[in-house]
Length: 392
Image (cartoon, rainbow, N blue to C red; front, side):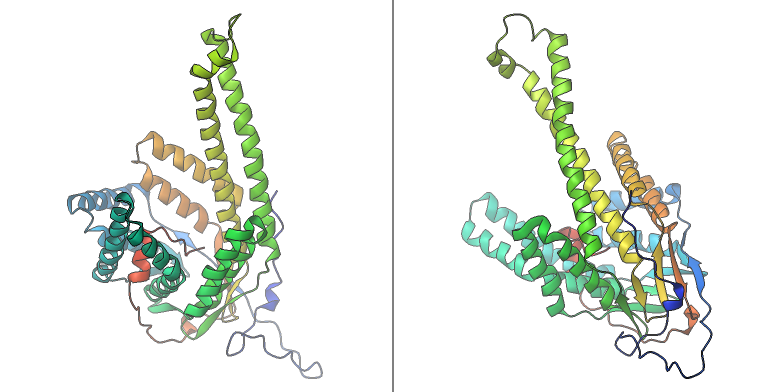
């Protein structure tokens, strides 16, 4: 059963101060204002698997033919499709990144990664080690640049988003927090998740409105402990399942015949069957645990994010439902040798967005803002090529 998530009264929605702080309480002796009307807007997704398959197969073909040069255009076209088919209050989102800017970042990051691969293969540790240290040192900076780039190129109602978090804050959330999680493991990992999601939400801007995160660190520990329990249970189940399958094979193949000793079983295929089944089972259950972390974290963050004190997001989808969907999507992609990838992506997006909404006490057309400078695409390119996770 999911841990209960706080859902404060809608009457708490009210404009925040200049920097996102709660304004002073009203004078109790003064006139009592009626609470503002709250309007709920559900997100809708209109993309289809057949339509996206045509776009996806062309992207794959052109990327292969051009030896990867077309990859930035493929990425932009994909995001434009998903953003363009996501609707909020009668308006769809837009993605306006420049593929040429992304290409420059891809080439730079790709060249550095290729140099590292060459140095590692040739055992040139004097070159490989500095490249690793450079990546570790730049990781928080790359996350910061990627968040700025993504926000500035996301548009709704003709107004682009922005990101106001600083590089220094990123080094705390994605540098110090990750180091602490690496040292202390499960004791600090949920705290790192909390710091990173708080950094993402607080830095978000739309026009003159700024993001505010109302969550706490405790639910992240509940999510982490649940995931840990799933992983431990998965290890036990994997060993038992591997033993059962290996035992059945031994019985059917005659390896358990009278007189067979332990060395005969070790030298035969039984032990490899046991290891293979146990490994696949554990990998599957580990995937379930990690997908639960992603789904539960996403739901909690969406239920505790505000924008300018007048817009609050919410999520009703089940993290366990998202786990089941992710597992079945992966199985479908394996069985179809990847051809089900577009269907899986559409299915996942539709499931999530069907359970996401925003509640507002102002018309969304009333936001004021100015165009934000997209900045360099280096961070975005690095997040794509090096699989840096910066979204929630």
